[in-house]
Each structure stands twice: as C-alpha cells, then as structure tokens.
Image 1 (tube, rainbow, N blue to C red):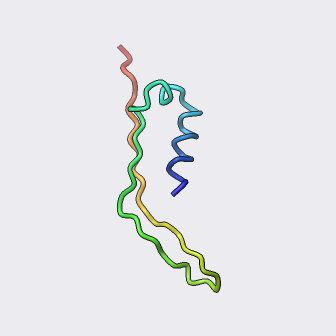
Image 2 (image 1 turned 180 degrees about the vertical axis):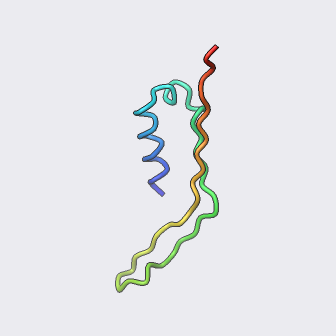
Length: 60
C-alpha cells in the first residue's frame, strides 16, 4: 500500500502547511482486501477505500 504514502508526499509538496502542521492532513485506509487478478502470472492487487481529511488553518 504505497499509494497513500505517495499521495501524502505529493500533498505535502503542494501545500507546505501540511509539513509544518502534519495533523491537518489525515489519511485512513478502510475495508482493504487482497484480490487475485486472474492472469497467468501470480499477481494480485490491493483494493481499499482511502479517506482523506484536510483541515484548513485558522485565518483569524
């Protein structure tokens, strides 16, 4: 499950506030399962729901 970490890194690069305040960006994985692809090779894929919570900074 490299995708959530890659997405977090991209979001942090695009918005420096997430680096300064990492609690404002939360990623949660729900309902994951491993699924066989059915191809001739022994490959599989992860299927899951990724929840992203972004809290904005106080503007006052």
